[in-house]
Length: 57
Image 1 (cartoon, rainbow, N blue to C red):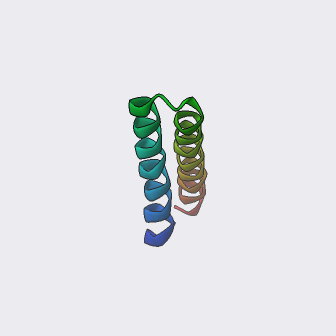
Image 2 (image 1 turned 90 degrees about the vertical axis):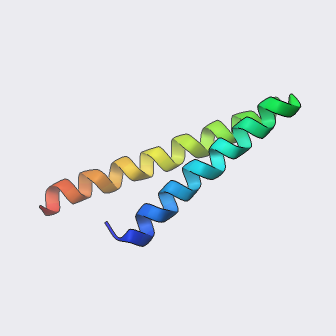
């Protein structure tokens, strides 16, 4: 995995966490759900990259 991919996945998870927390703070369930979805997407991408790395080693 390249450093860029890792940073992108981490950024996506962080962006999702911010959206989730902002949505929770202002009572916006839609924004909170979008944040949770983005966090999950970033985590899945990261897991996929980890699997690729395991097979490369």
